[in-house]
Image (cartoon, rainbow, N blue to C red; front, side, top):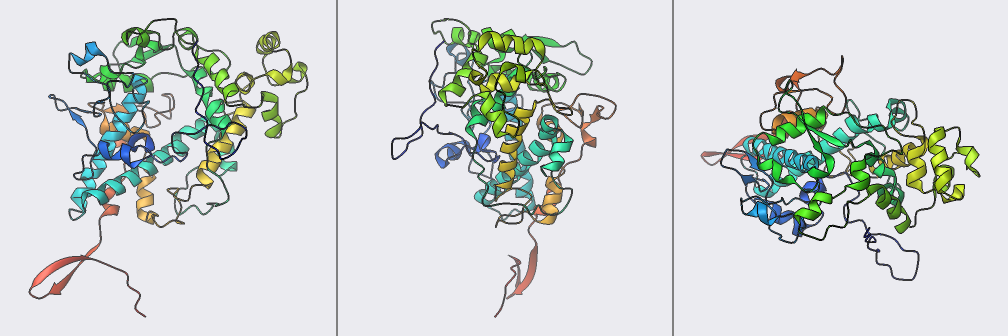
Length: 463
């Protein structure tokens, strides 16, 4: 398989090779807006704080189209029907249908909030509306990540111990300027790639709650965002995703990932077809490309006893898993981080083993404690007011999906959890939402000559 090494970060002297992160470390919605002004500006409408959208004849809006013929996604046969791939702040948005759908949902959310803010504050110009909307979107992403996603990975007990759960009220006071929020190399090249293990081989599309599901092989959804042009496909994709259980987090992967990655997309791009790629092998090789130390190094780094022989792994790996590792690696010190960490038995209340839990929790601790613009802190000049913060805490992925899907009208309140006694379907109208009235400027009317003029109230300190 062809393997392209990660670009090295420029340094001023000879030293160990380091890699350059092309995205920001922070959870700041840069996936939508991009990391640089030359990416952000072409995506903006420059009116009313809105982002550009592709408006279809049936009244639906999609992401703006990509005008780059060499983006690796656009297809001649689709262009003949007026269908193009999409442009966002992240070049990977077209990589799979679920990812593209989430980009679309969040872009619609931006324009929805921008419209409401402009109605509340008609005197705000495009720049103010855009920046304030972007600030709210970033805060909502942070809240949903730590309120809905992380508890599933780490478990409630560890979330509480590390103070990662969002507060119910007030400001969070633990910002630490000495904490470096950069993305750890082990996180990018190995740890967070655990999620590839939980991807099912068949993706579900669901036209309605009681409809017969349609199943599509995972690799056939790669670089195929054109499905979103079809009316109803967005809702089918969202319903299917919400109704699909993840696979177990373990060292076993669907054959879709091991043998068929990008198989169809290679054919559609009219490139020579060698074979489908093996994502697991690529992940392991990426760790070696980045020079990551082996698995036993990271276990010791996390405070666990360092294994010195294969027998030391018996207490936290299944017997058949350890048997396979023995058959592949000559020495316990040779075990790759990706292989060893995924092979551990999950901790109680989590879907991750102890090493992955350690490395992933470390990253999310630093992303919160080291971000001076964290949405819950008041230690930055752009802090939300207490009432604005109270409204942001009402944000959920359920209300984002309800407000920005095409016709979806029922949903489970906890989108990332299975349906159950405490997570039943409810009407979208029953899902709590932020009230943007907290963003209305407080204006005072004063007498100037014979006219009444609105001026913004300023807190002036007169010496």
